[in-house]
Image (cartoon, rainbow, N blue to C red; front, side, top):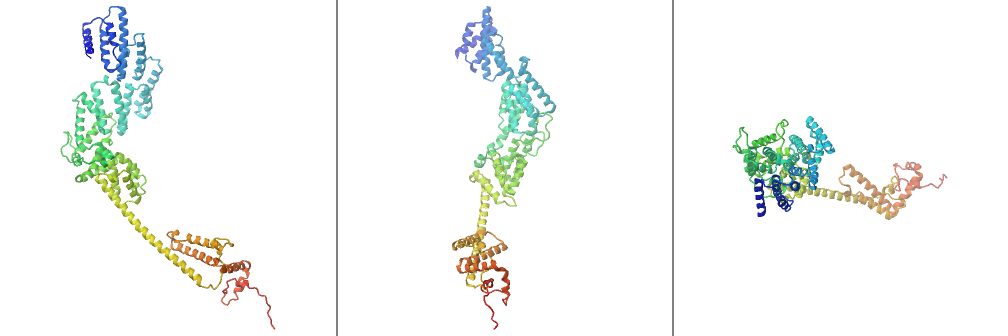
Length: 618
């Protein structure tokens, strides 16, 4: 280290004295230097000595030139490693005059750097890449100037930056289109894209920018970070590091410092874990007092505002307006992530501070309109009123970004005067369980969870009561059915039918069995029908339907009683056989009955009796 310092002192002394070049010593010293950032300063000192010292012989001039080109080339390599592309170009340009290997290497490096930085004036006009780039750039600029429609040139800009990623003019054009897009939506993705592109420019061209330009860039990026992205404005510190007296950055720093003492941390509002399970130590009353109740503005301004909330929103709107291209901002800017955060914090304060509920509660509806798309709000209301479809999805997505808004939505649903359907209750309960909110440290969440649990418990108790009542009704119906069947069976056993077997009914068809069926088959068919028409199998029936079932079972019982008894079955089969073979003479014998009826042997008994005697008249 002492040697290096001593060598540096000797170099400065030799430059001042204009000594002749000690090429042997300088070449020996350069051979000890490494390809790293710590050696760059020593390379530059040796180069400065060689540029100023004189040589006495032609051979020394050649040796000096070779040494200079080698040192410039190595300096350029180190500068490239430090992302100092423009400095590397200057170093390589000093190394291309010879015909040695370092000159060849420098020319190769320069060709790539010229393309990367878009220095097309230093590339031969016949170069195909140069012609293609310049034609495409002219076309893109012409279309942008005519319409200012970024969609017409986005693809071309992407191609141009693929060819020349460090081209100042092309990236500046891209930034111009991004600011126009930002003016239309204040979208966070566009804000991130602007920051990324400006940081790339500062990295590649920052050393060539004026101080004022760098201060302006840092201030612009700090506004985007603070008021559009709602993140820590890290570029504000870089601005103040360049110039502590730069007024735009000083004023922004004052506001940022003030809000850091008033606002909750971003995690307390935006992080579901911190929100739902944190220690809840923040002073929410202080927040509401600062924004809505304090009569003294946080900073002296010419115009009078109702409260600090309106003052700060006006400052944010003015800062964003100054940031965007002139002539394209109309009216008050859309809500940004910063203003959404403030509104959401005030909404949260309504549930955290009882004394501030009335003044802070209106910000819940405002935040809901700012954060959720109109279509999502409509889906939420529809789901809450009807089938609960998409309800849990909407709540979960909202919970991940703005957890208190999700809880506010649940509170709104449960407080509905029209009541909540059982489906919606179950959806809400599942959401609480899935997010683990039964163990939340938040009083509002616990209150809503207990309210929902109570609603579900009462509903289930009523369901159990209805089920018990229904079960008792079914038991009564079942008992009545068995009683009716028993009475009917007894009547059929003890009453002698006056008319014998009925041939107008096909008992085999009623039981669904063949005429050759055995007693076992008859019994099985009867039991199957009994099970089929059991009251427990029928459910709730109308009076007409119950009558039909009773009529059906009456026929089944009648068929069973006739066919299962061998004697009755023979009589029935005999009567049916006679009925089928001679039914045309049936009514002739019925006329012999004084009553027009039938005998106790059945309606077809006369058909079974064939006269086989002669009348004797004497």
